[in-house]
Image (tube, rainbow, N blue to C red):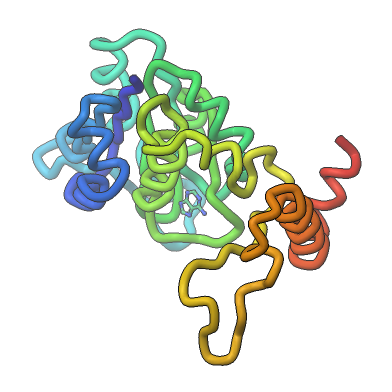
Length: 229
Ligand code: ADE
């Protein structure tokens, strides 16, 4: 069981998490996802959450007070929540980090908009997370990525827990081997003979070899990390 709290200006975006594996996990009570509308913590009659940058420059910056107030409110009712700021400046998300996050009782995900956060927001959170070296216009999709990646590690969420250990990145450094299903021949491409052989030892060795080769050609960076460990 893990509780997710999302602080966002666009709670409706998180309807995406009513579907699929995560939706089922919620329905079964394995996780909870609560959105907190940052606008409600905005300042003044207009519920302002952003402002122009000191020193000039284009774009708007998220003010610290609304985020601090939202965080205080979420933390007040719950102990031991790990607060994450979604930002392209954060630690690049890896399966290792996902596993660490899955060890918490609950996570608070802060999804920002505009050009960025006032620097002092960083002092309010436990970690800053980036989902990759590209820039999105808000932290909502990154927050959903974290929820999905963490939720599927929790006991009972996946139908078949074995697929967790078999899949790519189970050890974070190996891509998955090629998979085939029916038909045996599709547009002239045949399923590798070994997979039809029924020889489980041969199949296992073939898959290990394929996974290694695939990782070496597609992700030499992962291969290098693997050889070191
Ligand atoms: N917000 C905007 N871009 C992002 C990214 N790549 N990762 C996390 N948060 C973001």
